[in-house]
Length: 73
Image (cartoon, rainbow, N blue to C red; front, side, top):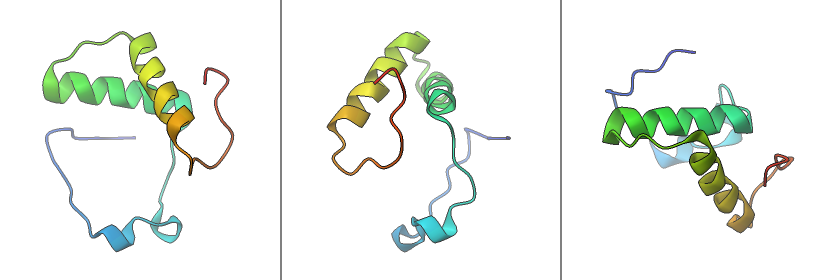
């Protein structure tokens, strides 16, 4: 996977659906991706456990969450 955090892509909201999905991240990969993005954009160096805790709270409160929940939620 390659990402350039310096570039922002904006797409129409109607393209954000399952038919247009190209890939998905595992929950652990998403945590690391969020941590890296926060450091790259904001220079917030958070511990992985802190980001994982925030992500667990988001998943717990998301009534429309689909799919298996990670073991750390």
